[in-house]
Image (tube, rainbow, N blue to C red; front, side, top):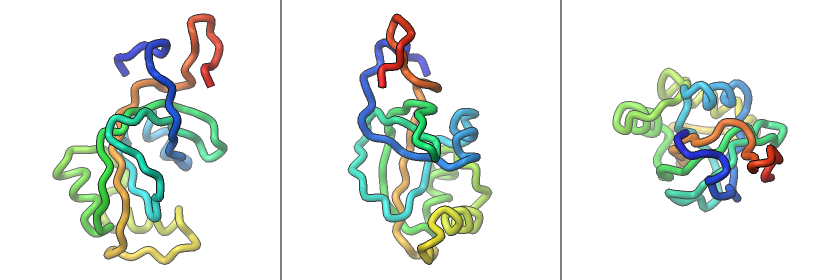
Length: 135
């Protein structure tokens, strides 16, 4: 969060977070997210908007890494191997949370997921020097 808001370039892409994950991101408890069926082309270095379920920007972040793996490996690799933060307590907790997020899908441990690492650089909407939203 070292960059002043007026110097940060606009973010074009986004990731939407459900409640209570919005709070986890703001509090630094979550800096990695696991997505099932993620079809967007995020790249390392992209600046993205972080949105509430209602589509309101609550933060901006830089994508640090994007990778795919089996769900069975995602939690260990992101937390133990790479030291990223995620609010789940383990692989089975992650499986249960994804099952609740994607209610219409039957998600299994051998399903491929996308993991996105991000670093928040601004909490709240970006504003110009006059205090107007840059959205």
